[in-house]
Image 1 (spheres, rainbow, N blue to C red):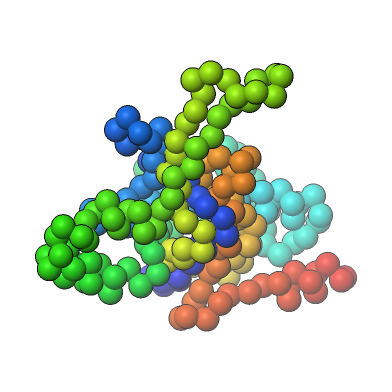
Image 2: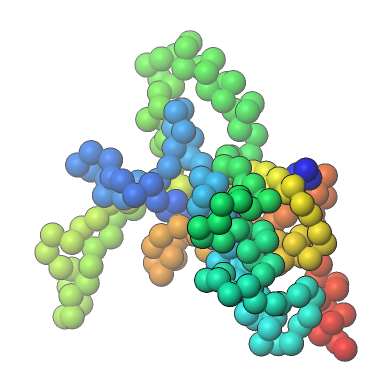
Length: 227
């Protein structure tokens, strides 16, 4: 088993949707832990990187870039190497790559302080106050053909604030260099996550690390492109 670190930095406000609202005020809310700190579920980031990996394979195939094998496996994933990393729907055996939830950078230390402050100042440091620290509310309306707002179309959404960084782990049981190459380029290719992306939300920077050092295969890609 080998462990890599995934870092995701929000370059715009992001709606990491929970699929639920909040009372009668917020129509679309994001995912929080018990303290009110936003996080990105493992299943969500795995799905985003899987889609990004398929895009990378398609681009490399069209450009005749043979940085890793682009054979087909006959499934919806299309590419064997994508199936090796992310698994295939209906497989009895799980994929050898495991994704953790992504939590804010410095999460463990922050949680220790929050526990202490909640106990000492229960009327000031609340779950709601912590949510407000990391998020902001945005309101949107649908526009009619004549350029005016449609009636009853006002929606309130809660988004994670720009520049928050999330950290998580990727554990790999059976590893080869081609898998790491694709994971790296899937991270590089990932530009947006969450919903409302057509409204400018969810722009991200995604980075892959090994032993605290950033991984890069750009030089190898450049060498292939120059041939």
